[in-house]
Amino acid sequence: MKIRNLKIATILALSIPLMVQAEPFTLMQVFERAKSYDATLKAAVAQHNAQKEEINKSFAAFLPQVRLSASEGRGITDSETKNSLGNTIKNHRVYDMRNYSLSVRQTIFNRATFAEYAQSKAEVASSDATLEKEQLGLIGRVSEAYFNLLLAGDNVHYSDAQKVAAQQQLAQAEKRYKTGSGTLTEVSEAKANLETVTAQRLDWLNSLEYAKRTLETICGVYIDQFFTLDPNKLVLKSPEPASVEEWIALSMKKNPEIQAAMHDMTAADEQINKNNSGHFPTLDLVASRTKSESDSNITIGSKFDTDSLSLQLNVPIYSGGYYSAAVRQAESQLIYAQEKLADKQRHVSNDVRKYFNEIVSGNARVEAQMLAVQSNETAALGTQKGFEAGLRSNVEVLNAQDKLFSSIRDLAKERYRLLYSRLMLKQVTGTLQDSDLSELNQMLTALPSMDN
Image 1 (cartoon, rainbow, N blue to C red):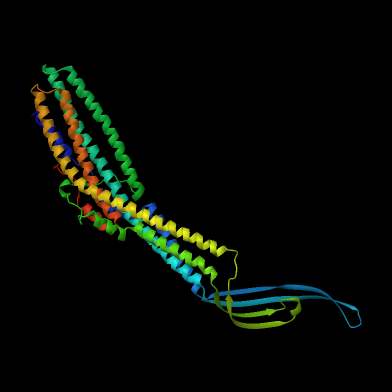
Image 2 (image 1 turned 60 degrees about the vertical axis):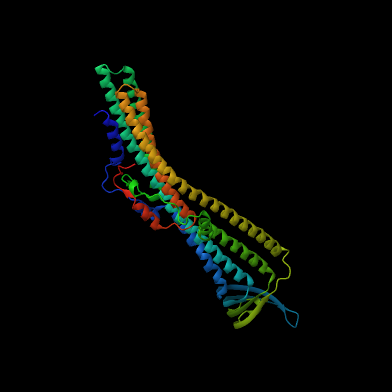
């Protein structure tokens, strides 16, 4: 019966629920809450909505500009004139002054308005891509935080099981000491091990609390009940397509940061056209209707009703070099945008290779760690049996237990790391979707699997 103690503890570590939970939060539930709560995403949405108005602002230049002006007041004029006899005649007049004007201006030709409109569309397209980046980023951030929570919960759970094993080892050492087959040193070693395991459990509890609070900052809810990963549902598979170059090519087309950088480059090019338009003439059609009464000293007591229609041509001759400098400035900004695009393409390509290789090596690491858990379990049971036969020391048993639970934790960590790498490969290529979270949701269960 004693030999089975550690085996029972191992089974407990893989079969007891992380916590008593009636309605655990799934990954999808957390994500749905995060979409309406996450401050980073909401700020990006607000910024995007503000940026979209640039199209309306620039398009307004193509539409008629209507202006109404009105003024009313009192005028006082003192005047002196001489008559034919040379006598000075003084006049003091108080009168009403009125002026109403309605004007309509329609641009016929202004090269700058076309460039500005094209620039605003490029800027909004860049904002669209930036918003998409934040939306994809939310999936990644929620998944990472949720995986960290699950891993922290696993670590606490495994720590509980390890504590049970340590307590059993202490009880066995005390029993051996009482029967005379053991030593006081063995009892002291077992007690020290139990204290160490208890202290480590406090660290795992702190990590779990931090993981809960981190997720709370994203979704706005303190997640105290949650699912855990069912290892039986995790299928180890290579990325599809199997060539990293195909993933890189896909990222060049779909990665939102690259798309935003490309649109920024287009906007910078249109800025050159806009600034260069300062050298071109403009042509406007202007219509106005004006009513005025006594609007100056020479029209006191007179009323005017004037309608006008005219073409106004403005030809720039010399502006002190302002527009030439603005063009050179915009050309430098275009170079800046081009280099930013190149830099982003290089970083994205590097990230694709990173996560692609993480998946490939992650599959191997999970398989290797599964074997390590099995080997450590066999070694721990064998050490326990040898200890009872007097062939192994108590320290060797405790070390074997520690290696077993360390390998169990490492296996859980590698599984979550693999899942996160799968998501990040899709995120960096711009192909990550909500359905990918739904797929992960299918791997969650309320009870951990008993298989390694």
